[in-house]
Structure formats: structure tokens, C-alpha cells
Length: 148
Image (cartoon, rainbow, N blue to C red):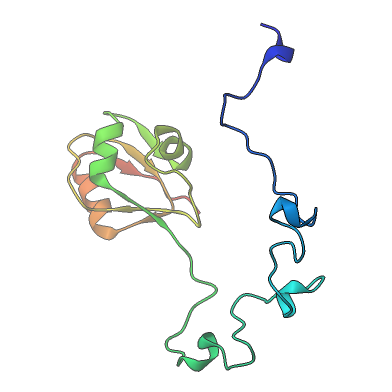
């Protein structure tokens, strides 16, 4: 195949609008900017949220609550997910969860929760785990290794 012969399909490309090229073009004169005003001027723009000097909506509305900038976001993984992807004797850690596709991004960490049941022994090497999940894993004959 010769790359120089490649072309976009018909109708895929569109010519750009050339403004300020005379009245006959339909985009002459004020070049589609209307008459006068801030946005008609060179470099004129209105920033996001600006309401012409009126007190903006973001400042008029009351502020409620508290947003913690230090909050840690853990990715929750249930025991049902582990049963679906892993088999007897598997070693489950962050790398294994990422590789299996259960977890897309690990965020601030991964936490195993107790939703569902596990009926085969596995070795879990995850830092965060609910007490109920620990109990279910050990009851199934699995082991838990502490990771810091």
C-alpha cells in the first residue's frame, strides 16, 4: 500500500470559515462578531461565570458542608469479585487485581469488603480489609498477610 494515495472519504473534511474577506463572502464586515461590545474587540472575552458585573450565581448561593481535601479514596472489591476471577490457592495482591481487571485504577488503595461468600482458600496480601471479609477468608481456609 502506498501511503501517498490515502485520502479522507468524501464529506469527512470541511473547509474552515475564512472571515473578513469581503461582504460578498457572507462573513465580511464585522466577521461574524456583531456590532460593538466587548466580544467584538480584539482580545475581548468574558471569563466563565461572569455575569456582567452582577454578583455571580456561585457567590450568591449559600455554601454548605465541608470538603475534606485529605480524604483517601479506596477502591472497594467484594468477595464475589474475587470468586469470579480467582481460583483455589491464588495469591491476591494489588498487582493481581489490576491484571485481572477487577480494579482499573488503584487510587489511594484497595479495600476488600465482605459482600458475597468465598468457598476456597486464597492468600490475600492487601493493606485494607473489613473484619467480616477477614473472617470469611479465614473460615474458607485462606490466609491473610499484612501489607503496610
